[in-house]
Length: 129
Image (cartoon, rainbow, N blue to C red; front, side, top):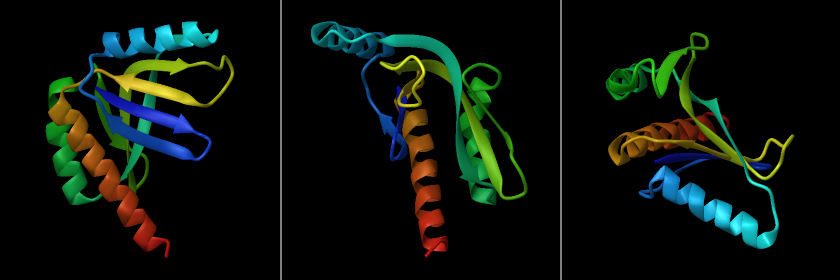
């Protein structure tokens, strides 16, 4: 499973080998113990990646089994690609922008997508220096 975590400081990707139902059950139990509400709803999230040949080649292979279901990609402009993921939004805030987005996918796919995202983040940080 892939988790996309949205916080005040940014967006982070994390992989977990837990099943989505198991992870959600733990979060519900934690929210119940602390008297908090847990909101879970279906939605989509997007990850931006640079539109380089290597990223496009790898994305084409990653997305092929999911096309039209869990994951798709498209060009944002000449420089960026948007990977759109379908999954669940989990948050304690009704109107907040902080929470965790969950995507049910294989460990291999999640790790490959995380690697692309990490490489893009490193590439962007060296360009901005």
